[in-house]
Length: 69
Image (cartoon, rainbow, N blue to C red; front, side):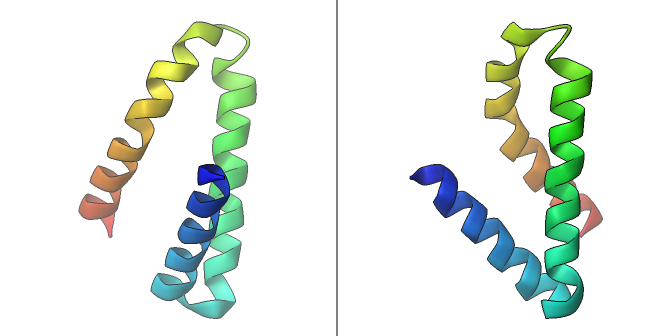
């Protein structure tokens, strides 16, 4: 349930920040890029590293958003 809420919240933030035309495109692109990175980059080589990195990913995203946004 929390995953769905976070997905809806991230979509709403993208639409709010970038508008209704480009926000959903950027949202879907970021989800696709993270899935490709996870599946092709990390999962085959270090499957046990996924859980600890998943806890740090939101913090890193907020830091990047603060620096780049």
